[in-house]
Length: 395
Image 1 (tube, rainbow, N blue to C red):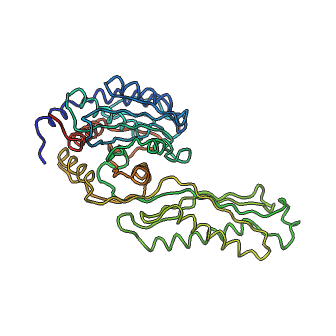
Image 2 (spheres, rainbow, N blue to C red):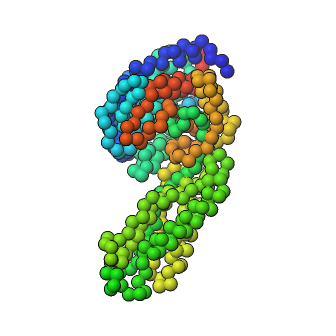
Image 3 (tube, one colour):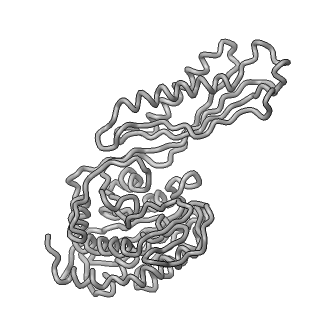
């Protein structure tokens, strides 16, 4: 599809200075997960100032969600642009701009994306274009695990605040994921009754939690190897990763407990119910290896995000691919991903197609986080083009 005169004029109106200033302003407001109120209020004020209809929902008092609409004709399709406003709780230096890059915590993940969303709406509003449907901007907290699990976006979905299709404005920039793994954080606890005692005072029948934790590790590794031998279409193999093992408080005391924590990533055709059942079976198998019956193995699975799959012919997929190719001259290949984010909430809970597309960066969660201003401009232009074509225009 070739760009028409209206599209070209609106894309040319994207203002890099506005994007830079808003990104720096947002980055200057700390918003660790669970404490994003000030940043959300600042974003809401900005969106009101550019002429959007704005509501703030405080389902979570310190992590409110911002909902803004650029109104189009009634009865048309609504395109949702979605992004989180919270950041990881790791300190960062003072925000600044230099040599085309914006530095600061959240610049890449994902306050720059929020600024690109706002600029797209600003240009569409200023340009006087009457869309056939609404552009819906949603900004929310409680995204970053382990403190957040997508509760902010889920609360909006429960209120019925969703578009007919959505672009989650992060997560991919040079390809387009149509399938993704789900991920949960598991925690095993291995316990025995009684108290910690000196190794020489423990009876021969005393069950040792570290020994059974080691057996648990062996079973988890065996399952991980089994998963690695069975790659899935688009996303590759499922996985089990072990990141924490803790036990004991002194070198010659028999402990009463051990703890193992890690991640379980599952494919698009599985759910948390499936992986929880699998981990429970491993726990019961390790318990059964204790002839004394002292050892108790418990497991919990904390969902982070579910898996998802989209059809390659989904209109929003084709639209983003087409817009990207027109703007860059490059194809946008379809892929699968292991990373988890917010699209599955919109797909599984909101029952709408949702894709990831944001400004490119490889600096999310880094000690020195930054985003290229040129990428924010490119992303804003893509959102404008997608809004024009998804919502359509009225006379």
